[in-house]
Image (cartoon, rainbow, N blue to C red; front, side):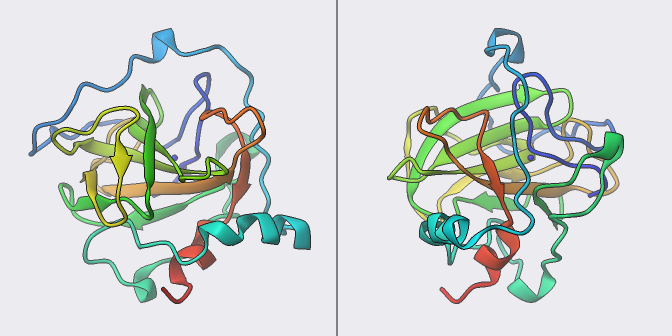
Length: 203
């Protein structure tokens, strides 16, 4: 956090076209980006991680596919796809009908509920060790009761597939990204890790 998505910082978030979809389930109000910290976008793409990076990524392996009803065979690796302004995607897009439940890929907690012009309604989840973040974008809305710092369980419904932000209303999808956190544990920055092998790995 499909044609031009990317995980964003409070200054610059995900990308696509424009129309938002009205949630079919009750949704918590998204975070107001006007109050987010102003930081540069330090995300570093890791298309070809080093062995050390692979070792750091290991705790995130075997993630649950975050869209209900989607199989590993339906996923496409779009991590290195080009996006506007010379950007790499640094994520994958999972196509599904608007309103399809979005699931927590692993145990963890909600670190941030955030809304932006490009990413629309988004959710940042940290793993229990606070070494990795999972980023869900273009949501139609959050699941009832979802709140910051809430403990999440693998497979829990956290929101619904949508086309909010800069996504095309004709192609609702989940923009999903994984990144390794630095020692500061900031939800808006980290080193991008390709989610595709983590989602298709044996569970």
